[in-house]
Length: 158
Image (cartoon, rainbow, N blue to C red; front, side):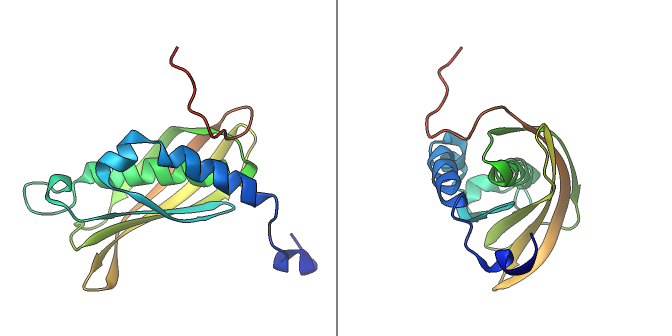
């Protein structure tokens, strides 16, 4: 966008955001892990999870699977915000940069290249230690964009 249009609210996004929040709210695994959708905007998504013993590995660090789940879900949600289309992860590359300790894990995903069929999304994961964020992982994902729009209902089992 150019000019003053950058300052206008994205009125078209309100309906998309509602549908995405409703859909995410029904994801059983989000509830199981205890993750929350803390920020949602056109082209971006932030997910977070608080430290709990069942999310840790044997050394008391967040398990890499928790980091991978946050990346998988946040990148897909971010892609869905760009056009309001449903999306599925096609692939992602995850680099674990440092141990994920602390009291909270945060994943911030942002669309790098929106697309009608495939979106490219980057994500960074941080652990919060005594109120300070430490970068623990980074990822790049290819997200398959599905036809239609994000719906508030779950599809029927096949």
